[in-house]
Picture (tube, rainbow, N blue to C red):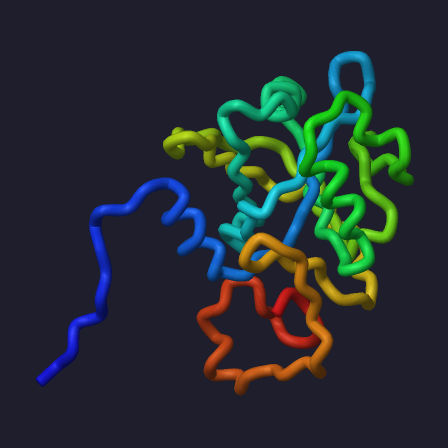
Length: 190
């Protein structure tokens, strides 16, 4: 006899958020410049690599985001992958506010966009496509420039709070990684 898992098709948005919170994610900050060259950005967990060839990424801003229209108009953005020492950066960019950059150190990317200092790495992209995703947009970006990779631990978000990897890294056998999009060997994404 096979036991069926207990579940319910009758759930609300709070229950859905709780269930999705069981999936640990990295934390990024998506940045660009507005028409007046003022930096704009927001914290984003909904980010992933999409394709190696061509090099594509995906992020998903809420349709109510005030930063998203600026990024869409600019047509280009930087994904800053946060390190575990950047919880305050994540909190700053995750909260409403007009000048999120006033206490944040940053430099310009090759296209002149904001790159947050001390991020694990960054990728500069141009928008390829935007697709409807319910209360979010699904934004596909083509990678144009990759930043240096710092040797640090990632900032993770799990069950509504920050988490860090404190245990030694364990790399699965090669055959287990062959289907992972972002793993290329060595000390990369995984």
